[in-house]
Length: 133
Image (cartoon, rainbow, N blue to C red):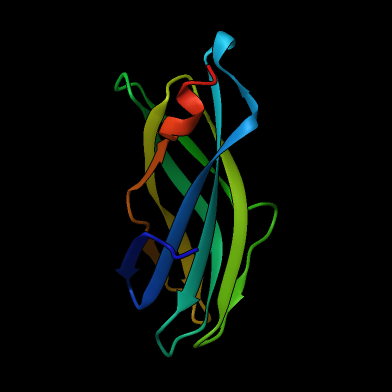
């Protein structure tokens, strides 16, 4: 599967794909679980470490939530030039659709801090599942 959501920021490429998790969702409780896979690639020539992240999560009603924390999935990956890191995580929503965007806080080997912005990526329950609800 290709990565439909892509951004380039401070010589880093971020690619995202999303999926709906039917088995872990419960529409009677307005709980829809979505997974997302992110690949981060250092396209520059400066090594750096991902130290934290900030997410903006918006559901279909326009409710906005913020999530911040250290690293990603318990890791603080180090990127040499040309290296990538891939991880998967989840986002619960109370609606059939939503979107997410944010940035990663980075620090290079000289202690310089910078951010890399993610693309806005979309979550939606595919039509074939809606009839099952």
